[in-house]
Every structure is written in structure tokens, then in C-alpha cells.
Image (cartoon, rainbow, N blue to C red; front, side):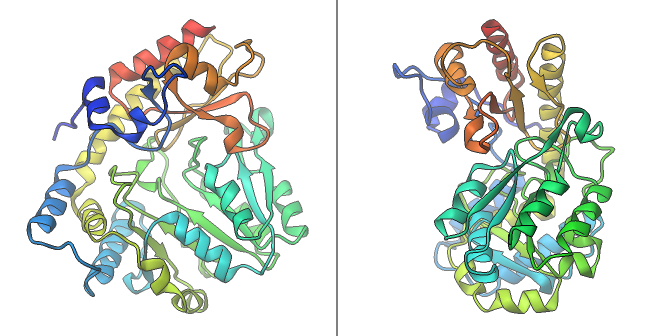
Length: 390
């Protein structure tokens, strides 16, 4: 099942946000390497299911069968892929992961309680809490020798300090956007030892769980580790990243704990309301029949990562091989790129659209996030253009 690869001209012509949303200041186009979309379309099974739904006229509001069908598909997927026996009656439909986070903060967290965000972090994690009246406590993550040989690691003492300061929520992104770490069971249990001592919840964003690149690493969901974990965890996932249908929002929230699920159900209809019918049909097909296509996609991404690792090996750029996701984290600390930030330099001088590290955490002004879910020749051009800056 060959994955479709599109030319630059095609991607510009179709007008995808990734390829047209950021240009040089003079208006010239850039290589799209920022927003979390892939350049591969989606799985044929997913496209076929969505097209069939459109042809059948399934274009109205959510039918009553939609949420149970999505719950059953998500539960079976988690059992098959990760060994987590999720009860389908514990799965709820949501419009997307971020609205699920908003609902968690607004409806489940103590009013005004701070939110702990390990950084670097997905950008909205740093802005959503403050908009809802909850201060953000950024906890810069451990790097280098302090990370115990893992490249990056959670700063558990920093998280503990945030909880001591009254935080009511810890946001856990696993696999970790933008670092690419896949947190192991030992790390998750260590986090639980910290969080479990406080009156706080964990929001577990697992939207990239299907995109573990290192086949030797099992993906472990935080809430799967036992009732004590699930009792304080809202787990949110979706097929949107793994099968490239982010423009058709639909997410699944997993709540194994009876008490927490009962609290969620008081407002579940509000969170479910804006889920796309067509997107949910696509998610069901992805969970049920999308494995083969995704295996090929991950092989392409692994190849792109290998290109980058090899090319940067003898350079001063700080790059840790990601274990999961197609989003990668490039450090330019100590490299003279001129007066602009790394992302602005990449845009203006190299014609690469990347995310500015400062938007992912206050301590990361010398970093940039680069998306490698692209054709191999595009990945090669990204590397060549970056090296030309050195």
C-alpha cells in the first residue's frame, strides 16, 4: 500500500496550511515544516470511509450511533496496539484534544489553580490555562546528563514544586511534542509518586501514541497502570495526527475511573457537540483498518529522521533522535545565526517554515521545532539548507 508523495507544486496548489501559511517576508514560499500535518494524504481505508459517508449523505448532526461506534473502535485499537484493555463504555467523544483540555481545566480543576506544564511543550498548553483564569507554571525539562541518558526527561522535583505551589493539573504529553520522547513505565510511575501525593489531576495528551517510531519501545498509557493512576487522569487521544485528518476534528477521551467519569458526564454533551461526523467516521476506519498504511508512513518518517541524525552528527546543532512523533526539536544554542531567532532565520535565509522555540517555552529561544512528516527529498533539502546556514 504505497503512501502518496506529493510535489512541492501540488502542496502549494492545494493550499495546505503547512505549505502556504508561512512565507518569507518578501512573500516567497517556504518549505512547510511547522504545523503538525503530514504531506502524505491519509490511508485509503480512511478516505474511502469518509467519501462513502459523504456519498450516502451523512452530512448532518451526529447520529446516536456515532459515539458508541467510535468508543468501540478506540477501545479495540488500544487493546490491539498497546495491550490496554479499555472498556468501550469508558470512552467519550470530544470535538478535539484541546477542547477536552479546556473542559478539564474549566470543569474539573479547582478555580484559579495553577497548571503545571513541562516544557518544551505544545504551544496551546501554555496559553489555554491562562485564558481560563489558571496561571501556568512552566517546568523546564532535564537535558543532557541530568536526563539520565534519555536525552530529555521530566523534572519531577520541578513538578513537585509546582504542586506544592497549589497546582491542580499536570499536563502530560506522551509521546512528547516536540521532543519526541516516549515516556516509559518507570518514568510514568515516578510521576505518579509525585502527583498522587497532591489534590491534582493529570491531563494525558496521547494524540501521537500511534506514531511510536522505535519499535523496541512499547507505548504505555499513564492511566493504564492501575486504578490509582486512572483516578486522577483524563486521557485524550485521536486519529487526527496518526492518520492526518486534523482538519476533521474528532477525539476520544478515556475515563476508566467511575467517579471521574461521572463528573465528566455532567458536561460531556458540550465537549462532544462539535466533533465532526465525517472526521469521526474517518477515525473509526483508521482505528479499525489503518495499521498497514501507518506502518509505511512511520518507515518514511524513520528514514527522514535517519537523514537528519547522520547529517547533524558532526555539527553543533543539538538534536536528539525522536522515539515517537514526526515533530523534532533542533537546538542552535551558541551558533551565530545573526540577530533573528532560529525560526526566523530558517524562514528568511533558508526558506524553511518552522516553529519558534520561544512559543514552546520561555527557556527555548535558541530552539526550533521542525516537522519531518514529508517526502524524503524534502527532508534532504531541509537538512541541506540548515547546514548552509552554519
